[in-house]
Length: 132
Image 1 (tube, rainbow, N blue to C red):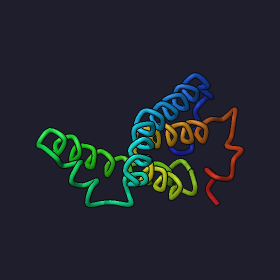
Image 2: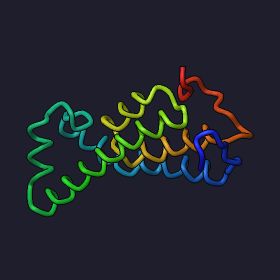
Image 3: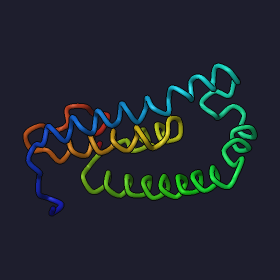
Image 4: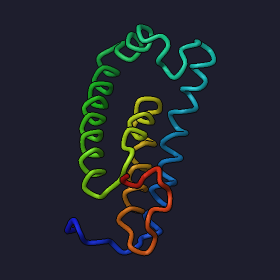
């Protein structure tokens, strides 16, 4: 699609992205909250040594963790480039969500904001995602 071209509204896709965002925040969020309460390691940030030790406990978890780090890095770069291209402002808010809750909910939320921004019938009404 050309930069200046607007996509037609695809409400089914917007809904799908929102559902995926909710699922992406809830699935890892439930065990994260349980672990935060039981260990005091809030959102896995307050005890980084423990988080790192448990994340890299064996080669299997290490492989998954390193793969996820690579995917998050690529997604963060793409989100910045795409946000600039389509005019989504305040990209830092997505980075905060990424750091606190991970990619599973943040990426579909970004895709929802992108879809809404590209829509001709339903321009962004929230200033949270609009370019200043």
